[in-house]
Image (cartoon, rainbow, N blue to C red):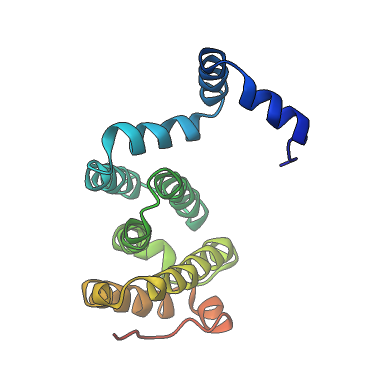
Amino acid sequence: MPSLDPELKKAIVRMPAGEKDKLLLRLITKDPLLTERLQFELLEGSATTVERREAIKQFINRTATLKQDSPGWVMMDMRTASGYITRHVKVTKDKYGDVELSLYLLNTFYDHHMDLLRQYTSRSDKAAQYIAKRTEQLLKKLVKLDPDYFIEFESDVNRLLARVHNSCAAYYARHWNVPQSWST
């Protein structure tokens, strides 16, 4: 992002308040993510964080229960749901929710599609890579949280790790040194 010319900065600061407000409002509407973030921070005051998480969990459940016929389609659905999680984190800065929702996403898709994700084949390669990488990223984010939260995630993380190491993602999990178990 290019920086503003110092003279332009000074000129903007000297603008009348009403003119600056109009300009600011016009600029904000051009960025939907910024608009949503301001809505969350200024109007909702983080009171809706849990509701937003629940809405994403419902979306994950609906998406995971779709009948898929290949690991590729499962991965595409996971990526779509992951996009919702990413947007949630950009809007709310909810690091706990990022870990919780990512863990929920992976475990829920394993719950509904283990038959497609069990065995490594050429058709499951991309999904295997995606799952192993997501798991690796999840673990990196998890250790950055306050250790008091670890107990809440321990059983779900270990369930996920067992699934990852006993499914199509096992090769990539070993390659990226994803542990087979995790403890607090």
